[in-house]
Image 1 (cartoon, one colour):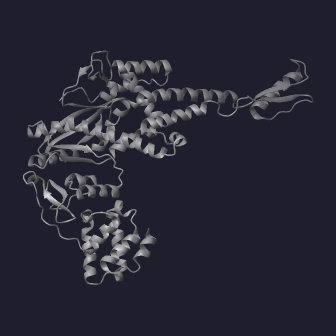
Image 2 (tube, rainbow, N blue to C red; image 1 turned 180 degrees about the horizontal axis):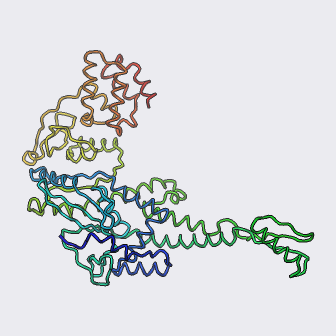
Image 3 (cartoon, rainbow, N blue to C red; image 1 turned 180 degrees about the vertical axis):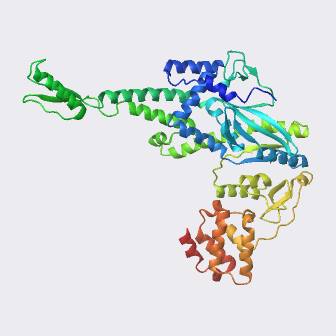
Length: 515
């Protein structure tokens, strides 16, 4: 392991630390941005960090962008169903569940995988996020500590980041050893544009403050018939001074006090500029600006949602690829001696779905001879495959049954017309509920136990309307995406057709009230 990150790193940096905000001008900002492109990263990196922490918009919007990814579930998936793939998944799951994360300049920062993702997300703002990786072999398996190292400790003159340390240095950085550092890289740093917006906002705020100081209070013009430098004149000047401070004055007859007010009132041109920069800063971090789009397009809200979804999905993909290519691959190689991992880590992006539409599309494909990968389908609907479900199964329609059947994916390659084991015919309530929801009975597997309990009561003729109401309420908790817009009148019709009118008395009214 390398020894670039020493215990005294924070102390060394505190001795060298500087604040570029104090002397920031448009000319200095332009120079800092040019230097960053040349490979001298320090000035811009320090400047961006301070702006991100202190600007009232960025300090809120930037953490939201980072947490939108760090709060997503991390999952380890397999590329196939082999024994080796299962072993690789178990190893990677154990590894990522036991990582420790800290900050090289603030060892009080401690966390796990979610903190690591938040730190990696700083690459979206500053182009690079750098971690030293300290691997620790243990009897339980390989472990690692990730140390986040600020970007201003590096230079990029040669096209590869090199460590310069707190003291800096022009062109004398130290190369980063392979497999000991993780570098997250984004396409373009947000802070390039954000720092320009900050500059315009800063100038407008300064002008606004100067205007307020100069014209916030009216000027005072005093008129007196007394001769200049006479006692009466001097007394009047003293009275004006008292009036300016305390708004209390007494004058001789004939003296006048006039207030002089600036013709320019209100916020002038400053407020619109500050407001626009604030909107741009928020849009840079989070996507399209809702207030702006909604003024020109009635669908502004949906446009914003599309933009935000695109950003989050791309961020999740970037973090997943970085973790897989730079860390997971090494863990598998170290543990098993192969550079072909059969499992991979993924940050799952949010999925905005129309569940009913997806189910109808899936059913259409199956009804017309198509097949669905069973594992992928369960994953797509955020469901766990039931115990005993064969690995590598596919969903298809057989010639003898309209219901989705299972067949082994391995045998399918060797059998032109495979026929799966017939599945039990769904009972009356099972079919009725599936018909009312517009789905195939197979999608109700997560609530099959509850269905069986109600069906047993129905068979004994002991089921009541209250039983059915409780059943639907509990089922809706397990499958909210299916029950959210359910037509309860349609459900009542299906239940009546399947089980008779006596078991549904009072259910429809109760469900409608619940709705």
